[in-house]
Length: 144
Image 1 (cartoon, one colour):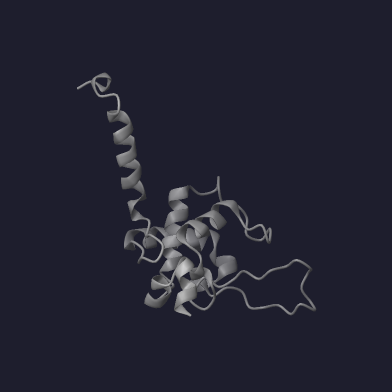
Image 2 (cartoon, helix red, strand yellow):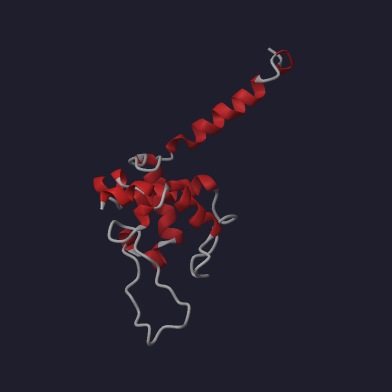
């Protein structure tokens, strides 16, 4: 079969493959894929654990009297803070583009791929319970 006979076939194949590749990404408010969580764990240990801590516990607060101006502690990513208030796409954006608030959260784009960032989000979502997953993103306001 030649692609010339079916001009849209090549595009259809590319779209189908891209959906299949991203299928391990949990949607906002849904439990993450166990394989993505496992892949994300190694990435978290390599890039995130130093600041965000074991199991996403974050850094202990530093007194504003002794910390440098503009210094922000790395927030907890577990259920104790508000990481679950963000959508999966919001979390991906922060991972890949960094935080505009602080240079301590650098842009990871070019260091890791989007697929790896998706795996990191899956691992982070593994810190959350059912309530946080059910209330993730914009729904968090109605869950309070």
